[in-house]
Image (cartoon, rainbow, N blue to C red; front, side, top):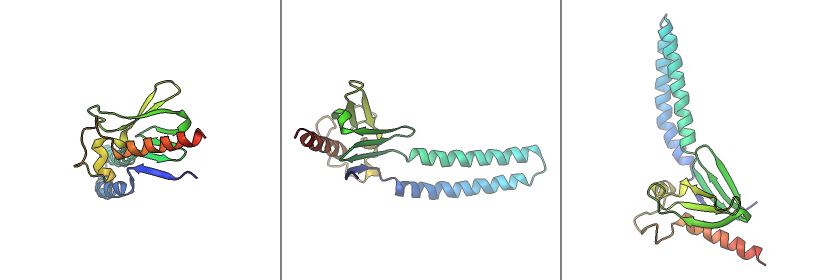
Length: 167
């Protein structure tokens, strides 16, 4: 089992908080749907179905919206995005960079060896997600000049792997 060196976004507490808020709204919506079922018309049944669809979409949004994660371990990197997951062993990593683009400022970018130059951005490591990671953003400078903690952790782990594989 590979030792985890860094994990961005432990989503448990975020899911619990959102689950409490959205769960209450879903219960109210299901109650309204049950109330609509008491009507003796097609509109009541359609309203109940619509309430159920809204509840299911809300649950899906919470689960997909809190799926972002970034893990650095001895075996490689794990990037979980909203829909797609990437498990990247160190053998496939060419370079680890940090982006200074507007929307993904400060995010870790993994450049792969094969296909040559393919870049995967870890969305869980953007500056916009730093508060959710519990990091102090006040002391940070520009992403063009200072590396963020996820980038440093990934680069350090990659260097450790390179040093170990060159022996």
